[in-house]
Image (tube, rainbow, N blue to C red; front, top):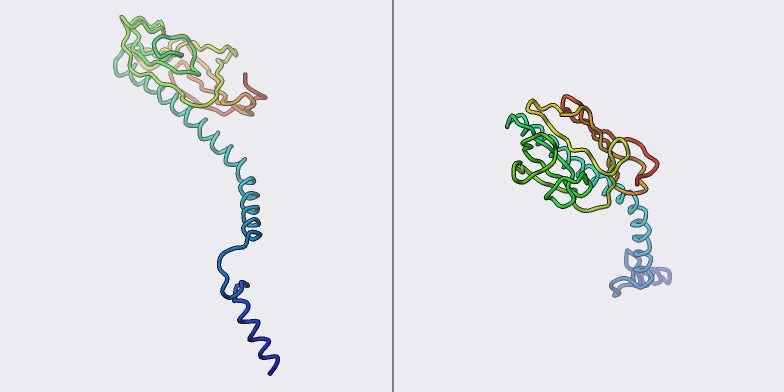
Length: 194
């Protein structure tokens, strides 16, 4: 009988989950252990999440720029006129700075330079937030304008632009437009961008 009473006392003292009958909530030690486990798991997930965000930003920026390049080609064919895309740091003139923004315009004389008196601005855009680096195929920071002829071909032959999105990048995106006006985007390996 004595053994039965001990068992009954133990059942009354402790519930099925290990807590005392009548107690509620967590102890400070249990809470600290839970937070420590959560912090460890969050620190393990942070680096892959950062890479995911960086890749998403790169793809979004390149897709935005290629969309404007396709728009320029389409407008050249539709309008049966020269249409240019040029780099623009201020959104008002062509200075070859694609890392800040660009202009797409109907180019009256086909020179690739926006003159508000004679050219018609179609759209302007920019990459928005984030650090980015741009060079052309020769490594210069300013880009020649991309000029499409009336038939959608690239005036001036093939052109290549390279984009990086951080100084310590291990890869960059290469945009190539051939003489026929077709666009190709590739991911190429690099040792770093500047």
